[in-house]
Amino acid sequence: VQLVESGGGLVQPGGSLRLSCAASGITFRFYDMSWYRQAPGKQRELVAAITNGGITNYGDSVKGRFTIARDNAKNTAYLQMNSLKPEDTAVYYCNSIRRELRADYWGQGTQVTVSS
Image (tube, rainbow, N blue to C red; front, side, top):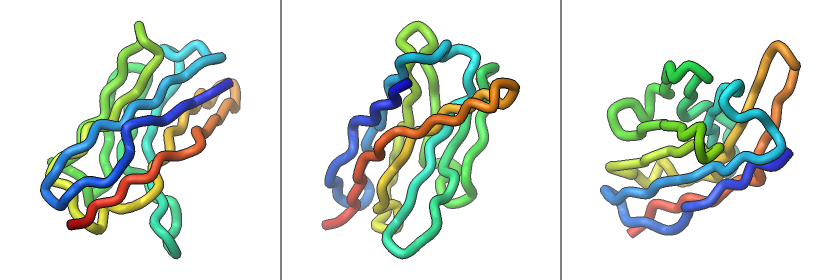
């Protein structure tokens, strides 16, 4: 199983980035997908989640700015991040979970830095 994140980088405050998480080795359409982030010295926190049925959920700090989506044909989840703030700086991780199989997988993370 592999989850490969991409799309991170350096962006100015107010800018946008789109993260991608390409999955392999799983039957993607059955998995719930999430994005988490971890800033230095802080605990990992949920950013956004999308169920296998397309129901979405967001952390309070990103509501209205970030959008999670999935493309089951491409085995890929996305995180569109708009109006980025310096406090969004963190390593962003992709997670896939299928509770009935107790299957839980993580990507290696991608760095997002918001700075002028």
